[in-house]
Amino acid sequence: MNTQRKAVALISGGLDSLLAARVMQEQGIHVEGINFYTGFCVEGHTHAIRSKDRKKEKRNNALWVAEQLGIKLHIVDIVEDYKQVVLNPKHGYGANLNPCLDCKIFMVGKALEWIRARDFDFIITGEVIGQRPMSQRKETLPVVAHESGAEDLLLRPLCAKNLPATLPEREGWVERDKLYDFSGRSRKPQMALAARFGIEDYAQPAGGCCFLTDPQYAVKLSDLWASRGSKQYEMDDIMLLKVGRHLRPARHFKLIVSREEGEGNFLRGYRSQYPSLTTISHPGPLALIDGEASDNDVELAARVVARYSQGRDAEEVVLEYVTKEGRQRELRVKPLQPHEIPAEWMI
Ligand code: SF4
Picture 1 (cartoon, rainbow, N blue to C red):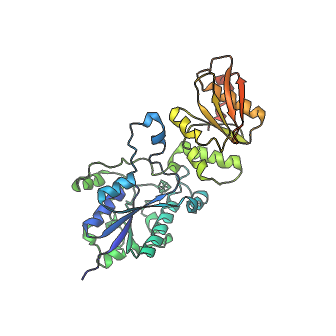
Picture 2: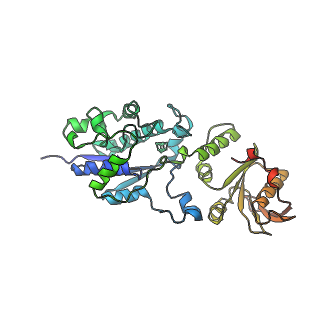
């Protein structure tokens, strides 16, 4: 009697991993999905907050893919362990602060631990040769397999025919002839395969699956490290980098100013951790102060916040300053003029 083989698929929520898992299901493999939460994931965060993005779908694409495939999805929080990947990537960063090659190695390594603990047979990813400049090149795919420790337990169904046969192929658990030889950046082969499977609705490919590929986000993260004098972050730091306008008037403090109501509501949730400023006399933003701000710094911060309020042209704007312990103080300031906010403050 043939044993049904079991594979875990790394599910990002995009089309490639969906197809890779589907191809394996077609060959009778029992597939379950694993989705790693790093804290930098793009999905559903700012889209859920900002009103201009309100029309965008807020579904969790990984869960949605699992539902389409009819598979179980395991969402695994790797926030703490993942820090070493972001802070010290052995293979360096891509165009921004994305350590894609180290990230892939790390995730496949985690998936290997996972299958060993659960008696699964192999790992599937939706990687395609040449699809991405850093982690999905012909030279780097073997690096991922080797340095993760997965070796030939890692099968990439979408480009397997361009690669040496893996254990599942050699053992006949899967038929190599029914795998694919996709390569390059074109998405057409994936779209054609999706059409063959009758899959019409899928997440559109973006620049990457996490904020570390976003140039503006990378600038803000670099600024955070520079201001602290060392590379480090906590979950709150990386969440707040996704929200608001960030200005750094001095190395020892910065301001996070909401750009609209949704962001203001989000930032309000952090008032027990950061001093905050809100305009009272005029409608305006909510701002958090990150760092050690003196009274003079707070006054300067209040003048900046006033600038972004509807009282920007008034002689005086009244604000409420609240310390993180909840002590309140009223401030009356003259809003800064545009020329008084140097471009270097904007992060
Ligand atoms: S884009 Fe982000 S999550 Fe995706 S491989 Fe690169 S570093 Fe990892």
